[in-house]
Length: 265
Ligand SMILES: [Zn+2]
Image 1: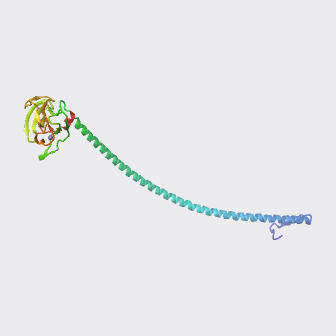
Image 2: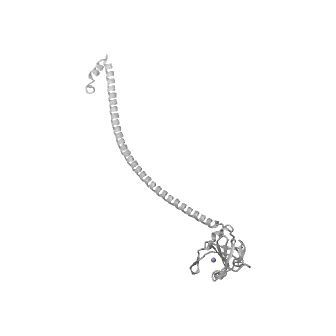
Image 3: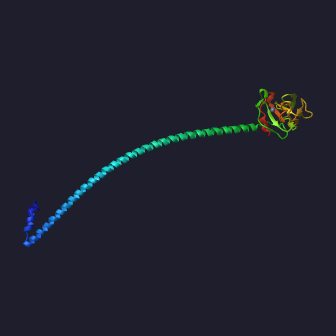
């Protein structure tokens, strides 16, 4: 009994001797044994639980430490990804800038071409739009012509008028009111007529097949009056019939008649 309870000895003995019979003593003794046994089991349980708690908390600490490491690794990875993202964004911004620049260049080029096309159209309209009051088309019949003024001609000459193609014998008329200034012949122009317009300009007709009957130098003619016929005299003799027509403002150097011819079409 001493070995069982050293410190609680007095209490223990007191419990043992407050009995009225040996039988009661035995009952109490047995009860105390049971109690002490139960206490020991409780203590053992507590110790096991304490050990378990220590073990669990150690595990938890280890787990926490592992998680801290994982978290810091994840943070590092996150920072790396953010840095890469920044790099990619910078790269994209650079590419976008380059695209913007190219688009701007392309837009500028398109606008330049559009302006060029517009100015060309305006030019074409201007060519077609020259109207001369009282001016009549020089060939009275089916014809065809194009702007060939300034084109190269044999002997280093440049073409000083427009060629108006029509069938031989198609009437040729005075383009304005005026006076027949000159009737002549040459190896180049063939049968030639020069009309001095009341407007101050001189008009030349070449390669005629013939003059109209009664036409002579100094004769007054009015716009639309027949003065000759389409032919291929002069250096045109091997080619198609056409009227070579020139306009000399104020009797001076020739200008391109094409815009004025277009103006009366
Ligand atoms: Zn010609």
